[in-house]
Length: 444
Image (cartoon, rainbow, N blue to C red):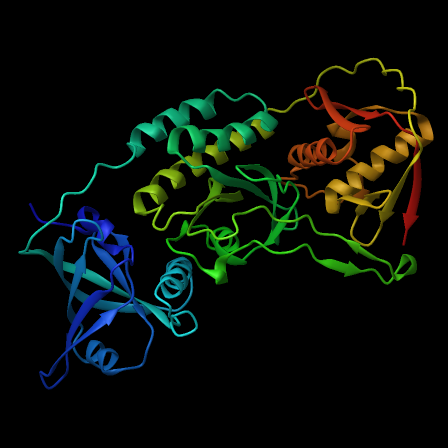
């Protein structure tokens, strides 16, 4: 049976440089190393184009090449006969290879030297095994197809959006053995992602944000494709100190306005897959590990399928979130302790409880609406519909993410204080629990 690239994908993870043989227009051969041979599909591969060189001239003059790849564990070798088709300098394939190359360069001590100019796409003509000794390879740590089947069943059992987020990450741990993971959703403006759930970190990082196009997670969202970095790469690492932003308004005080992003200090493997519902991007599922080469092509396939199922589940639960009949207004809880100063910065919707930063953006605007309604009329019962009808919240008409913003606000309150809470009381209804007096201050 004719071999295809599917059968030897593990040879294409970049752990061992491939050997590329080309031939000039005059018949002179040339052999060199190539940093990356990337799997495109069963009949196509992409080689990293990094340098203007004799090899490049040869490929353009004579498009048929030979590439020798080696399995990183068994040392089995294969010679690929390929024909050059085109060079891509942007898009999903280019960005995927750029991210992987950054990890390979860092691992080999060539960071700052390797620079991807393009992804050269080739059509496979033939694969021939190279005779030689082959080492025995241990069986995979788990059957990913069986894991995906179990994961699908667990997603299907979720009936609440809030529980679904935690269930998704617990499923990655229990079914796929992934100990560190994040679930991020797309913000209303479509320019950034925010963390709604995490697993395996000292702090949850709920509410932390990443811009579209920033690193592994941002590129996976931007290109709507899985991005895998098999080795440590500072260029694609997210661990960073909390920034201080100076506010010109309100006395020019410097206040922390960014929630620290959770993550391993030195992730040696990273994998980010988009969460899609049809053609609509909902967010990104991110996994990392302190081990080199923890994730490969099979993991990309399994988690991409899981991400698509998660996207469908999120969309269905958002659409089915109706509204129960109104309940009688609960009696306000008696205040305990000293009053809390609640500051709202109109510029970005930031909320501070005394000197402690809580949240900003749409979630901050929602909190301010609830706090004002409580302070002015003693209200504690609310429904999603009235929030959707409030133009001041600036929710988009399609895919407003209201439920996920309420979940985010609820989780931030649970982390930051014990006297405020947002508690679900029915479909499309919730209670704003207040146990200390609020002193509201509008800034700007």
